[in-house]
Length: 89
Image (cartoon, rainbow, N blue to C red; front, side):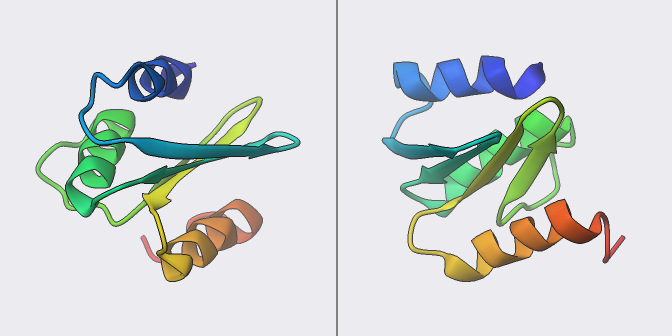
């Protein structure tokens, strides 16, 4: 899955600042230390550079959420996408 490769890059430190990660069942949460890192990771994950991302999710066998650390609104927004699907596109 595409986010697995991105996850490996993040953990290897290839993307710059540190990421915090956590797991709960099929959900992995990755918290970037700054908004530029989150935007870059989401643009790569979504395959849509040139768009600004505050956070994003990848859904497959497992679910990955990407947000900036201490951004509870982003986490709530992405969890809502998991529950309700696309609601603002």
